[in-house]
Amino acid sequence: MASDLSALWARCWDEELKNRKDQSPSYTQDQYSLTGRASAAYGGKKGPEWWADNGPAMIQRWLDWRAENAGWEIWVTPDGNPAIEIELNIKLPGDIPVKMFIDRVFVLPSGQLAVLDIKSGRLPDFDEQLGLYATGLEIAYGSQFRPEWGYFWDANKGTHGTPRSLARWTAPLMSQLYAEAAAGINAGSFLPKPANNCQAWCGVSDYCSVVNGSKAAGVDPLASL
Image: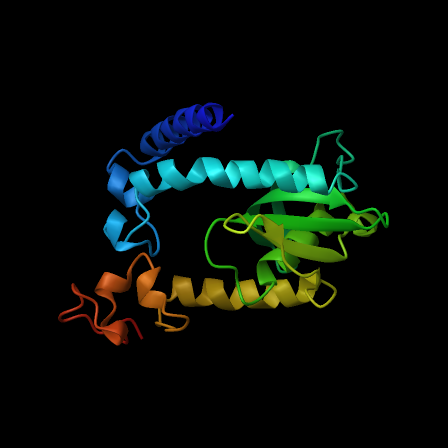
């Protein structure tokens, strides 16, 4: 079984890498695959070797978790599609377009809907992402299909975290948050927000003077204001 999962992982890795290269031909494999911290044996980063060694085990943990939680049924959308990697293109109030891909939507044994996001790294401290998914489902399919709960699933542990109530992440709130973000982007304002050892996982930390990035010489974080 382990060898089958390793072969499956390798095939899917190659297919995804090809798709990414087709989308952005100028990128190299290292730019796509090097992520957060790993042991010194892997050069301190999670590159292809780390993923080849650890990815198949994550798949097995998912299979085991699904078997142990058989009462969690994959929701079927009103369109008749299973709620696996759902792509939604919605507009928040204020005509703000948002594209999202939702890993899973489950029907819990209680009959309630819940969104689940699969994480292979550090779990988020906040549930805004899950709240956005709930809001997207509400806008796309109607308020009766808005999930009440959200979960992050930890691929390193093979477990889901505590349920997170998504009631506070309303469409007006999400619209306000995204409008503020869009205003900053359009103004060219990208202020650093250092937190949670961000230099270890942020893709642009090398250019960030706040965390003394190796390529940050001469970079003024306030230059765009």
